[in-house]
Image (cartoon, rainbow, N blue to C red; front, side):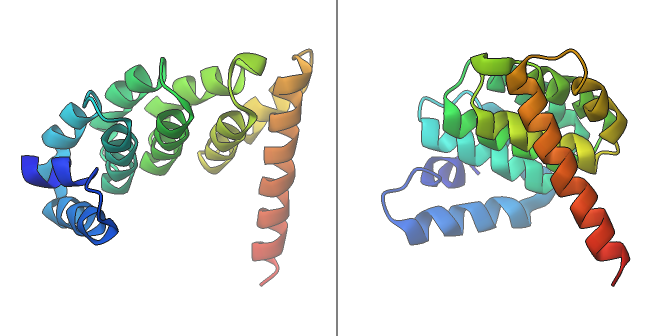
Length: 159
């Protein structure tokens, strides 16, 4: 399993993709190695491990993901945020709200991704609450996510 984790940073794209596929096909057997990989020295391995944990969808990953996302660069934070939303568990709501409300301290892309994840988790009302009295940066991502969410609901319900 460690070889697959290390190959997440292989210089050859095919090797990286094969490693990711092997971890995904291993299912729960890859959970602990992927959580450990969140602390890998390579940023490439950390962000790919975060994404893979999102694919697994195991709610036990929420706390390790939230912890890892706190002091990381864009690549890891973006994938941590995506993974939190992908897992689809209510335990991800608070970490996602914290990201949305980080304001200018966080990348707009990361905050928007968190806002979209909250909408998918049924937290549209919490996002609507963010429109009132929030800093402009928070308002913008909440408003944009709600507009996208409302559009997708209207579009797909009419099919």
